[in-house]
Amino acid sequence: EKIKDICISMKAEDYINMPDKIENFIRIEFDPALRKQYETFEKESVLNLFTTEEGTVEISAVNSAALTSKLLQFTNGAVYDEDRNYHEIHNLKLDALEDIIEEANGSPMLVAYSFRHDLERIQKRLKRFNPRLLKTEQDIRDWNEGKIQVLLAHPASMGHGLNLQAGGHMITWFGLNWNLELYMQLTARLYRQGQTHPVIINSIMIS
Image 1 (cartoon, rainbow, N blue to C red):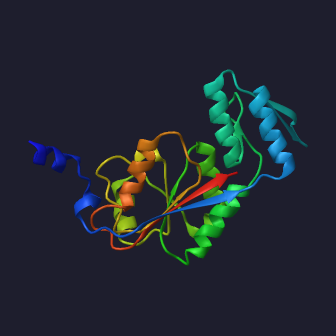
Image 2: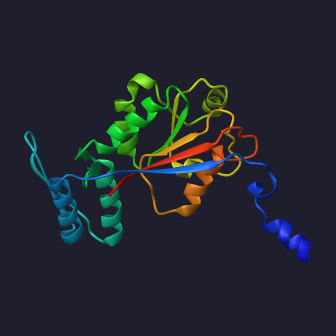
Image 3: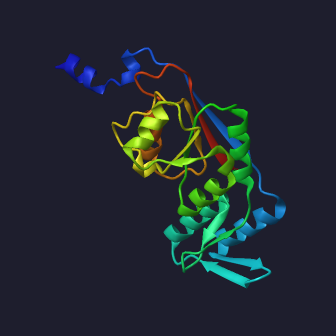
């Protein structure tokens, strides 16, 4: 029974010769104005945005859960208002993501996004790389055949058993979330049996 329990608790990397897994934390700093804006929003749960066409746009969080979500959106560069329209605040993470993909020199990149406005802004910024949103079995086949340079995916869509290890070995998290299981499952799409290259995981973070 003890041997059986040990075998059940072992992970694939415990008994298969797996390549290295390298985690890079890319830290970006807010400028003083952005940091003040973020801290005021965090403290008062109200964010005032000023635009030349719309005047003042006020975004408020009704509870702590909503505030947490909107603060995550803020760090990613845009925030939804109550009508689900988003307002851009900065492009710091988009700049970093573009630099990462350029430095990859054509190596395929799996990019994890958190919010719908993340996806739209990433697609617009990376248009020259022809990014593909992971939706169908054909997308999976094309990725594994090396036909996609940038594959965009939401972590919640990257469940157990999805095999993407043949198509690449690099992941970039545009925006992290609070769910460790989702983080581990997305990583396991590339870091799994059959992967022949070190898996590089980039996490873009605001500090």
